[in-house]
Length: 380
Image (cartoon, rainbow, N blue to C red; front, side, top):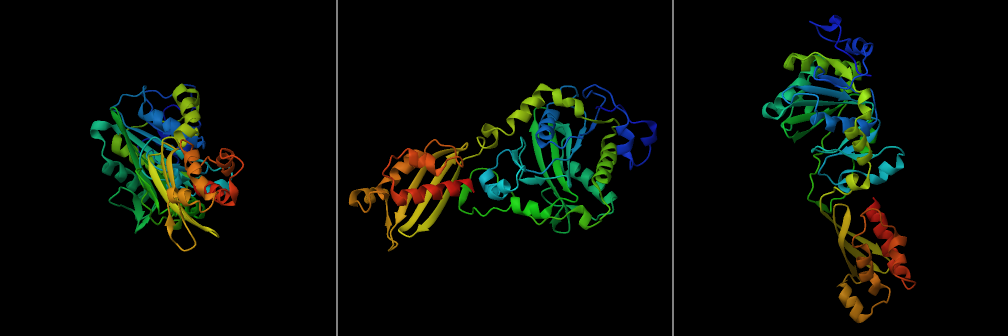
C-alpha cells in the first residue's frame, strides 16, 4: 500500500524510527507528484528492477524533482546492460544454487550480487543537475552517520580503507538521470564470491567488464548496523540535501502495465542473453587422439561461427582442409560439419545431441568427444 505524508512526529529531527512511522499510514493511490521517497516492501528483483526503470520515466513527477527509491531483493546476480553473462557470472555455480537467477538490468555498470543482506538505493534527479559525485556524498554521509569511517573512491564507490562496501551504476534517460547502488550490510560474501568468480580469461568481449575489488559488509565494521538503520540514514541525508518530505511504499505499482511488461521481459532469453555484445571465446581440449582448439564467435546470444582445428599427437597443427585431403580419419573430417551445425544456434543452449543429430549415423567417437566438450564449454 502507498503511504501518505509522514506525520509530524518525524519532522525537524533525525529520522531513526522512520520505518514504524510510515508503515501505519496508507492509501490506495499510485505514486503522485507529492511523493518523493519510495520504499519497496517487495523482495522480487524482477519487480524492483522494473519499478526502478519505470521510475526514471516517471509520468507522475515533474522531471525537475528529486526522487529516492530503496529496496532489497531475494538472492540474484544482476549484470549491467552491456555485459556478457558468460564472462561475468559463474553459471555452473549459479545453476547449482536452485532459485538464484541472473538478471540483466537496464542501466550500465558492473555485476553485483543481491540478497536480503544488502540494500539497494536509487537517486533520481533532473539530467541537467545530475552530479554523481554529489549523490555519492549523500550515501557517504549516511554511512558515516552510522559510525563507520567510509570514503568515496575515484569510481564513486563507497569504501572502508581499500575494501568496497557499495557498488554504483548510472543511467541517463531523456530529462532524468539516476545513480543506483548496492550497499553490503550482512550479505553472504561466500556466495557472492562463488557466483561472481569467473576464469574465462580467453573470452574477449566488446561489452563492459566488471572491475573486481575486495568487499566487506558494514556489519564487519559495526555489528549493530541493520537494513532499517541504513534506510533511515539515507532518507535523512536525502531530505537534508534535497528538502523533500513524503515517504511511501510501492505495493500498488505492481499493476502498472510498464512494470508488468518489465517483469515478463527481464527473465526472457531475448533480454537476458539476446542483448549480449559480441564476444570471441578461444579454448582447447586435449583428447587421447589429439588436441582440439575452438574459436567461437557470438553476438546477441547467437553463434556467428566456430573455427575448429586439430593438433595430432606430435603437436603438429592440422587444419580441417588438410584433414579432409589426407583422410587422417573419417570422423575428424566431419568437424567441418560441426562448425556448420553451430552457426546461428543459441550460445550456451546447444546440446551435444543437437549437434550429433544433424550429422547422421557416422559421427564416430572423436566427433562425439568434441560435441560433448563444446556443450560443456558453452554451458559453463
